[in-house]
Length: 275
Image (cartoon, rainbow, N blue to C red; front, side, top):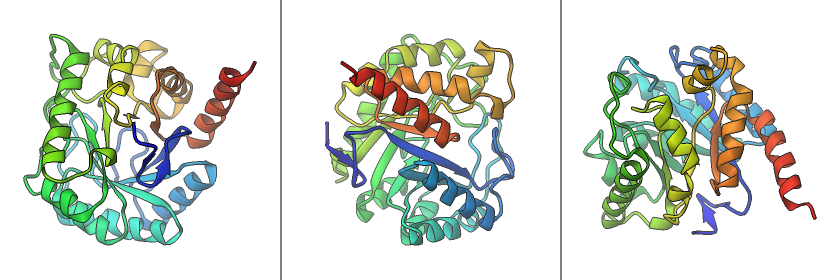
């Protein structure tokens, strides 16, 4: 396991604050659609304890519409630029090579691709040539269709093997393995039972030796396991899942509710280290 990722120490959990510069994201669509709103949210997330700010301009919720690349760049590049100027470590949440390039030009240090660089044939070359860190996520299908009938024989093993295969492809292209993190893709072409299996056995991803990113924040499986809460009411369930993964060795947590998650992690760590 590397000691750092994107220049950040892995000796402590890393919180990755979410900015959806979109009108239609499942949880907070429209909240940060305007550039000024997105920048203000990013600064607040940094103040709350986020070490990475993840900026996305295309919703990948189930059934989401495809966003033209020019529009995606228009939504994200100025936000990335302003946050980098403010001292943030920024990741660009995109599956499109042109958007990756524009964000890297604006100072983004990480590419976070929900398709593990499979969507755009130029994406692998962009990441390999620009020297940025990389987050590879597992998805079955495409955002428009992924939740219609996701099927696996062994979801944990299939996700693990897929991510290892993508790591191998990336390393062969010249991307350093130490700068590749992996994400099981909770909710991306998975049922509630699939999500629970991945969370219960996430140590099998930790054991790959690559930093593991977990994005469970406000996702629909939480409401299905609880009382049907609306997305912004799912922070307690999101934190519960994150703490279970923290105990299994997960290092990076992609969250909406940074301050609340930071508090929960601090208490968990204090208990775990007590004599």
